[in-house]
Amino acid sequence: MEGTSMIAWMAWTWPTAAFFAFIALCLIAMSVWEVYSPGGAPRRGILGLDTTRGDRLFISLLGSAFIFLAWLGLVGTPLWAPLGIALVYAFVVFRWV
Image 1 (cartoon, helix red, strand yellow):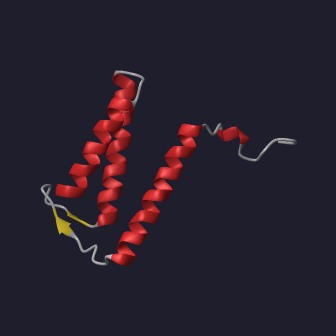
Image 2 (tube, rainbow, N blue to C red):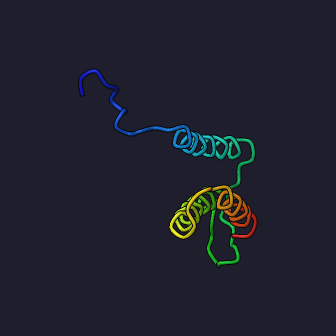
Image 3 (cartoon, rainbow, N blue to C red):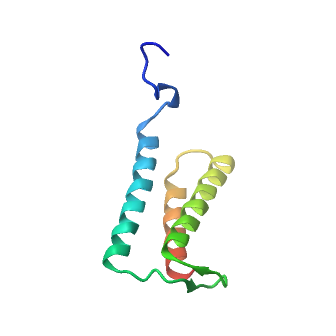
């Protein structure tokens, strides 16, 4: 790999960078939230699971990935509709799960 960047093979585009920046911002925001408002004690949701804030973040991110993959497989682009669905899904997870 002479003369090229060590990460050139990754083909970073602005959406890819924005995705990873969003994940980093979520983790930072969750850390700040925990510092200023401790008490991420487990909460029992509608599924009967005991989840903390971090668990709900993970569930919402994982579910959002499946929403986007299903949309891409069934419909294709553009991806604005699954973004809206994923945001509503994340709100529901944080509110009631």
